[in-house]
Amino acid sequence: MGKKLNVVDLFCGAGGLSYGFSKSPNFNLICGIDNDVNMTTTYEKNHPGTKVFTIDVTDLTRDYFEENTSYKVDDVDIIVGGPPCQAYSTLGRAKLSTNGRDILDDPRGKLFQEYYRLLQLFKPKFFIFENVRGLLSMGKGELVNQIVEIFKDLGYDVQLPVLNAKNYGVPQHRNRIIITGTLNKEKKFEYPKPTHGDSPLLPYVTFRDATSDLPEIGQNESADYYASEPKTEYQEWLRKDSSDVLTEHNYPKNSDRLVNFMNIAIEGGSIKDFPEEIRPKISFNNSYSRLWWDKPSTTITSNLGSPSSARCVHPSSCRALTTREGARLQSYPDDYIFVGSRGSKNLQIGNSVPPLLAVALADSLSEYFNY
Image 1 (tube, rainbow, N blue to C red):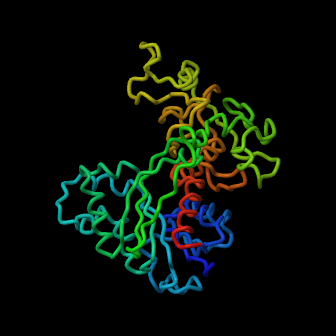
Image 2 (image 1 turned 30 degrees about the horizontal axis):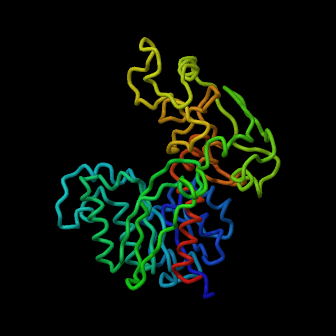
Image 3 (image 1 turned 30 degrees about the vertical axis):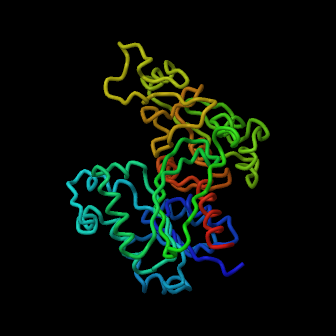
């Protein structure tokens, strides 16, 4: 085995993508970068051997990097991360030409411009650019085409499949576009093959598989204990390094109106099932909607604790999800520490790359680099 491959995580958030590389002996995480202090504090607590910088990516220069780490920019082998999807929402609605440069010229593309600038600076052998599946349709597909062409202009061989986290042992239906680029055009990167799905693969991990060892709680309740020993392999994995003290499993009191909606909601149903006279007037069909016990959850968002958000009401309890349940559905182990308010913790979880998906990507990169 050769020397470890050096990794920099841009827009690192709570460290879900870094998790996969931190658990492999083949990678050395040099640093994570984010401008949110709660996220970088969370990152630091869970990646104690890795530098973390609470700065805007515009402040990451050659001098800053080399003065604050023991590395040169030429030492970086891999860059991972993805600018927040909000960076593309207005740009994607703009009229785009086919010259492949609009995203670099338009001020609304600032975060992508910084990612592009840092690829130019570090010239890594490989990069991972993660983002929402919706990027494929923004600007009628022209936006992602421009992104790919700009990466190719830097000399990278580019691929852009959509991966669903549930196919890699995550108890959540979560489609994400995983753009990769390699400077080695003679060797094609092979994405991780699904491990979960229809037979002969392993069955999908369900909400029950992920949470059935947690105690039932309701409005304005909390619990710092486990209801049972682990009941599934997934629970065993989540708890393998945790103590007997359960954290982040609490829920605030909702208004009587929200409680009434949740009492009416049925498992897997929608607000179309509500009596018309009390049905919320301004909502999506999956607002105030319960998850299923025996399916993976729908996509976890930063609003996982808000009943009116997209299908995040517990399958049987009268509440939305706790922070611990959200973390488990994202595949964060129980010993992972989150810092900040409830809202900040849920934001960190909802914006993450699921750690188990990150493990699968890191394993594929190990194979690609012959480790």
